[in-house]
Image (cartoon, rainbow over the protein chains, first blue to last red):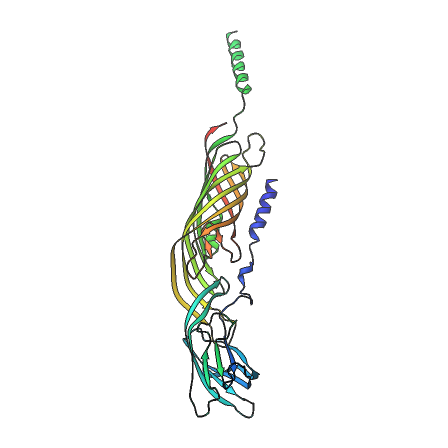
Length: 163
Length: 222
């Protein structure tokens, strides 16, 4: 009897393997993306799609497209978690053979790192968000408006671009 | 003739003694150490710990029991590295549910404990989790120490004790723990609590096991 129980206890003791909190699941909200919607500058209540939009950023001297040739009125793009700003090139009417009109936008913010759990560790949220467009001879973006100054989830529009 | 009468008297005395109830239930203080923790400390680079334990028999089946120990545990997770160190005490009682044969002192027991720990947690480094691969990951190495943390929990124990040599016992047990309260460090969590062991993100349960050797200092028999 005692031997059987010892055996049982040893078996239970060794079943101590994988548990549910070893993997950061996709459903866990981590660092939020920046949500941008596009609206009509002349009729500001209405959304207005951008034709063949490409959104590009530079990482290690290499262009990375986060949006490519997409006709859309809203996008979700990442902000850098290691710096207080992120630069993006917004290219309207971009096609393979015919490069579109490029506007440069810089997003500035203050980062705050927030603990999630054992597997996911931390996420960043972004406070005091601002957006600054670079003026050139042919801007297609007419106004950049901050709709939410804190980026802490992906449920609402943070930036509205009027064009 | 004289010697014969002496031997008869001696026999009568012997009979008298065996007539009384046999006092073979030893009562006393049993002290021991946990063997599992030093072994794990040798094998696992990320853990060191020890525990001393004792119990005192107060009735046929009931023992007042306590454990005192200290643990240091490093958590090397996929996205963070942290470490916990501190000490703990557990106090409660065990009930022997095993009916021993005459003169034997084995036990199958269940017990309850109240556990208390004071500890320090240090977060060494962590990464900022993003579901997006565009930018290279950010790793923060900025050690933060959280001191003076405490935790309280209740524990259910199930185990076996066997007397392997006179007054020397080997014991193995399984512990199921339920956390009552804890100090949660600001913007972090207790990933390990000394005595409670690994915490779980999704519940207040903990598990543990003990493998110990102890020696009974007999005080009286009943």
